[in-house]
Image (cartoon, rainbow, N blue to C red; front, side):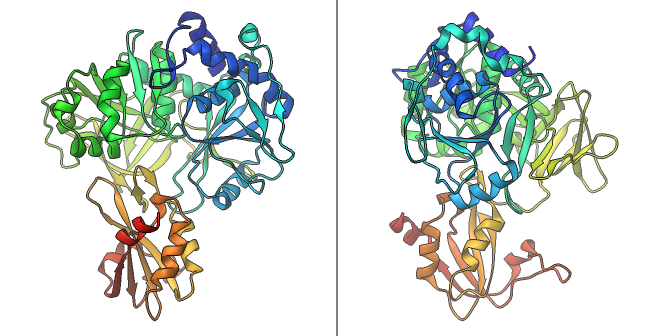
Length: 510
């Protein structure tokens, strides 16, 4: 296959009755999802969001969101998957680097100030066959004839090395950057996942994560389409309802990551999970496999830049590896088309054997930045080591990062918001361990006293995962003497003059 449209069209022909959408009593089939998607392809083209156009897809996971993604694939658009929880001002700054021709939003309206030169389209009811112009004057857009034109989908003409779209980085040290991914990138990733996890037409893959992440889209949706499985998502993760839903939908494969794994281990029991059919799960955890009776778990190493996934390893229930980093940090063996090495400083480097396996570079307003050396190596920014078998163990991010509820926090943006608060002279944010595997945000500040009310007011306007739980007033923020960069790893040792816990108050205001 040359492109994602070929993959979609082939699977619609081969498995039209496969489920494709949100898990529940009314999950559409792949044919039912492709119908309004193909109908919308012509409308997207007419609106300036079709073949070869850059389109930002901003929305929450739903049947309409997946239909919008299918429609953009079939139309041959180049789709940027964007976190809908980011504030409009941050979205505007990010999309200025991408300069999209259109913005399609689903379930989360985007203001006209975000990509003001782009066409804004509301795809919130696209699964029901309705597409609207998202800016005044609002109007419904006439859709086409639907599935009858599937063989003529414009996206079938895309080349394998054309840009399929972009996923953005976490923005841990600045504005999130868009990683360019080709059709070849996604097709090879999907095949690697489907083969490594042995997907078959008897499987049902449940990926209950936001679809702008590489795990649910690359592993769950594209890997699932490649393997011909039923592909299911969730609009919202709930620990209480998780196992009943897993049983009801007949899920055999779970695509998870650290936060939901920890939540399920703490909030549910083996009795809650009894009767499930899950045989494999991504993000291996020995306690999860043992407690909930899952035979196989997969650990891996990779990133959006590093092909989505470049190492993988299968674990059986009962395995207890002697790894200080834990089972889930074991990258294992490299993907067959990826080379890797660890430099003298412990940083992981990867290189592809062929074009299109890794990302193409970072898309910026002035072109594509290709961060590869002259021999094609990409420095990942991650620290790792080699075990006695010669396989990869991931240690941690080399760069400074904070992760809350599965989301990396854009540190520079959060600091900028609090820097404008009256009473704060200087500011920095850093992390501390939370009860789960994620971090909590600590806001360090200098000033005469802590302006708690103003900080809470500013925090209330931020997404939940960007809000600090504690404010620490210090004498000075440690900074590099050359460029003034915050030396974050020294913050934990700075003497605290005054401290305020925002946890309970923040919950009251939310």
